[in-house]
Amino acid sequence: MSLTTSTPEIVVRPSDVAIRAAWGEVPRRDLPAWNNTLLGTDTSLYQYPFWNEPSRPLWLTPRYLVWGTHDRPLAFVCMQTIRFGSAQIGLVFRGPAVLEQGVELPPDAFVALFDWAQAQGCIFLRFTHSDPQVLTQLAAAGHAEDFDAFPYFLDYPILCPDYVVEMHDNDDDTLASLDREARRKIRRATELGYEFRCDDSPEALADAWPLYRECARRKHFRLERPLSVYMQAMRLAQPHNCVRLYSVHLNGKIVGSTLVFRDRTTAHCQLAAFDARHRHSAVLLHWHSMCDMRRLGARRYNLGPGPGSLARFKQQFCQHPVALPGPLTIVLKENWFRLWRKLVFPVATRLRPTLRKIVTRIKR
Image (cartoon, rainbow, N blue to C red; front, side, top):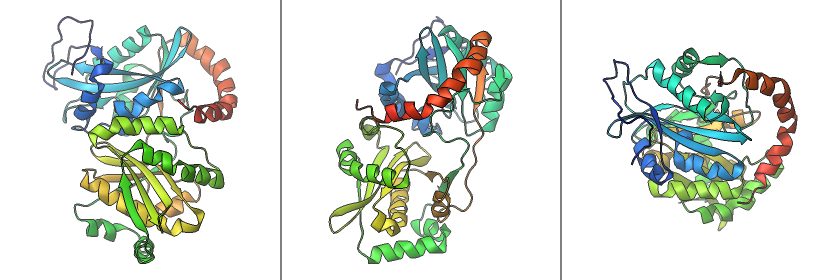
């Protein structure tokens, strides 16, 4: 693992003293090693290279930066960039991540990150993070706007809370924490003979994809990414044991499926689909999915947001959803940002449905 930096000598001091260092960009050849490094930390899934690299066909270019030294990297950030000619926008989902427990980055680290992005031509940076304190530190280090300047990626829900199940070391204790109705449905589905299976191959997702498309059509929602992007994410996550495709079958036919990726602490259910005639098998599928993810090391199972009727279903697993802080916009180029907000943003908002349709049809 290596990083490139323009500073010839980087000095890292103890965490209670200001760290004099620079952000260095990670070469693409080192990204697999960084997936392993992040698995030893509490870094969010949405910062992992195996999650971000497949986004390149969606006109996103991930840039990976490290703060610290070769021997002691202290922070990591993946910044997805979108280019408009010589100008760029930077998107940071659930980052930056501190790599050592108990270490707090100094304000200079955030200022240096903004300076690096500005030198790359970024007009603004949009941050999300599960820790409001990190967003507060970012806001204090730059020109923060209480405005979501790029609300176009719905697979990173911010305004809708996530339903997160805290899993116990013992499956029986986790089962006891679920709603009584959920436990009844699990028993009933087991009695009916539903078979649970798991796989980690992209080809298995391709086989199950017609079920996902049919479920999306029936429930009037859009699959946010094309099949090829999910398959590539699975290929990159596979060597790190961070992805599973779970399914339930009846009489040899697949009737339900979930696609789950994990970081060190949390399993994230990214996709779920069910045959309309077998909805009652959904609780059984999620139950076995979370048990398997616990065995892989995850302590939480994130069912995702619960808009509309989905909330009633997910409340069987978790009564109270976890609300995340809203996004933060850091302005780097004042004049360009005013132009973006006044002229480009309204047009982009109107074109958003069309752009989403185009993105979901990308094959490669």
